[in-house]
Length: 194
Picture (tube, rainbow, N blue to C red):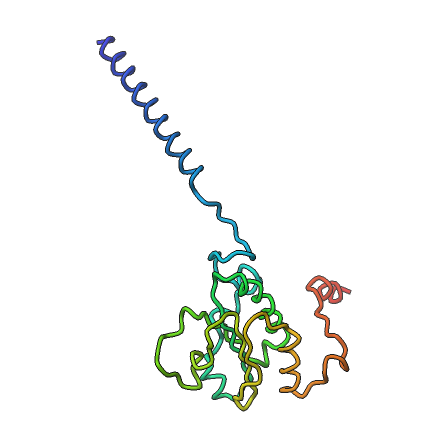
C-alpha cells in the first residue's frame, strides 16, 4: 500500500515538473515575441482615441451636435477630420483641444473620424463628407451663416483658427487684445479660501 502511494507521488511530481517546464517555455515565448504596448505620438499605430490619449480631452468625442444641427441653429462650427492611427492627427489633437478651451461654448466643435464617413457618390452640404477632401488632419470652419471661412489640410496653427473666429465674433485682433490667461484650479480655490 505504501509502495503504491510512493509510486503515485513520484508520477505526480514527474508530471508536475513536465507541466512547469512546458509552462515556463510558453511563458518565455510569450514574453519574447509580444510587442510592447507603448503609446507614441510620433508613430502611426492605434493607441486609442487621440483626443483622450494625447490631448487629455475626452469631451470632444462623441461631438455634442452634428453639422446639420449646428448649421440649422446658425451656430459657428468647426469640423476636424482625423484618424486615430495617424501621427499628424495625434499631434493636432492638442490644437483642437485648445480651440475648445477658448471657443467651446460659442462654437460647435465636431471631430469626424474619416473612417466613419459613409461612402456615397454625393453628399449634401450639411454632411461632413461634403467637405472632406481626402487628407488628414483637415479643418473646416463655418461662420454663423454656414459659410466656409477656413478649409485647410495639415497642421493648421491655432492662431489661424483663432483669427477666423475673432472675425466671426467681431473680437479685436490678437495683436490689439490682451492675452487671456486661464486660472488654474488651485489659484481659484486659494482665492476663495481667503
